[in-house]
Length: 333
Image 1: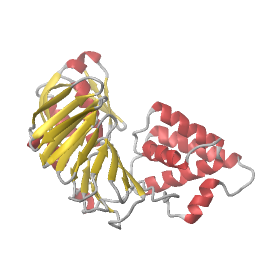
Image 2: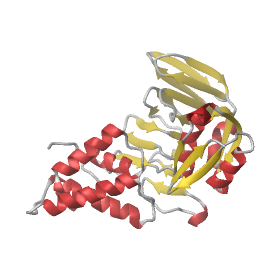
Image 3: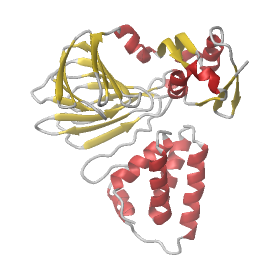
Image 4: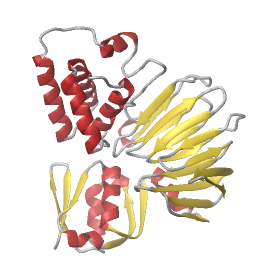
C-alpha cells in the first residue's frame, strides 16, 4: 500500500492526542495493517507516549494490540522506507525538513501544564508541526522571533522561506508576531490572515466558524474572495460560506484561557461539553438529551479540577453526574 509518510505520522499524532476523525482512524488502521514497519512505528510512538505518563485512549490501546499482531505475523525483517527514514533522522525528523510531534514534559514542574519548545534558527526554512493534547497547552518560539501560545487540542505547522512566513493552524492560539519585511500569514481552515507585526487570538474550534480577536496592530483577513481589515480592539467572526461579523472585542474574556479560565454566557450543555473535554482531557456524555439545551452562565477554572467545576455548575443547572473511567456522564436529577 502506498502512502505519504508525513500523512502517516500526522495520523499517529492525532490518534495519540485524541483528535483523529473516524475517517482518518480508518486510514491509519489500514496503513498499519498493510505495512508491518508502519505497525512498528506506531508501537514505538505509543510506548514513548505512555512512558511520559500521558493518557492513552481505549481505541489507541486497541490499535496498539492490533499493531503487535501485525508485527508478530511478519516472517521476515527488511528495511522499509520508514526504517530508512529513521536511520537518517531523529524520531519524527523527516526528509525535507523537521517533522516534530511535540511530546515535551512540563517546563515549570507539575504545577504548570504549559510545554516549552523553541525552533533553533531564525533562518530555519524547514516544516515544523506541533500538536497539543487535550488538557495541555504549548508555548512555541518561531524562527523569526514570533511566539505562539497554543491552547489544547490544536495543531500548528510552519512553512517559513526567504520570501514569507506561513503558518497553517486549527484550534486556538495567541500569536505575537515579530515585525519583519516578510509577510506573516496564518491559514486557518476557512480564512487567511496577513500581518506584519501584531498580537491576535485565533479560534477555529467550532466547526465552520473562525473567530479572530486583534489586540494590537492591524491585520487583513481573506475569505470568500473578500478582504476584511481588522483593527486593534476588534473581533471578526466568520461563518464559512455565510457571514462576517466585525465588532468590538471583549479581549479580557477571549484571552482568559491563557490563565486557565473559560467564560460562558447563556451557553447550553451541548456547546459546553466539548470545552470541558478540551480543558480537562476527558470524555463528556450527556445521557439525557433533554439536558443539552439547558443553559449556563459562569466560569470554569482549570486549576480547581473538573469535579469542583461540575459541582459549581449544579447550582444553576439541575443534574447529577458520575464517572465511568475517564468519562463524565451527566444525567437528570
